[in-house]
Length: 151
Image 1 (cartoon, rainbow, N blue to C red):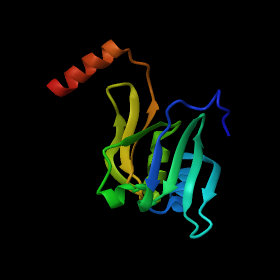
Image 2: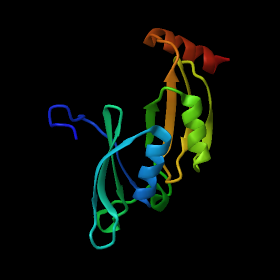
Image 3: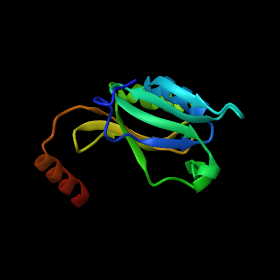
């Protein structure tokens, strides 16, 4: 578990129906490591868990409507997207689809210097995943984007 000095200053905290299954999905697909979980002794729901994605942390819980903790399925979707850089975008993307993810954008070379795509996980969260293939300056990225949308 990170110490207060190394703890990330900003970390996503997601809520889902079926946090135990979601944790298993993130461990299998992304290689996340479960750091710990707090389980409700009454009904077994996960009140709080932390996952490590390399040196980054994501927090997750089951739905607790009485606390206003609702996942995308209960809310009709979420405007928030998650972004993760991976070593092999093609294999991670396929692994996500094989485990119930839904392709939203196919994996392809992107103007900003990464190969990436987007999928929805089985719990309603959307993920941009990518592998960096070249370092692109902000100025070059702007030019490429302009050329792309002007074509």
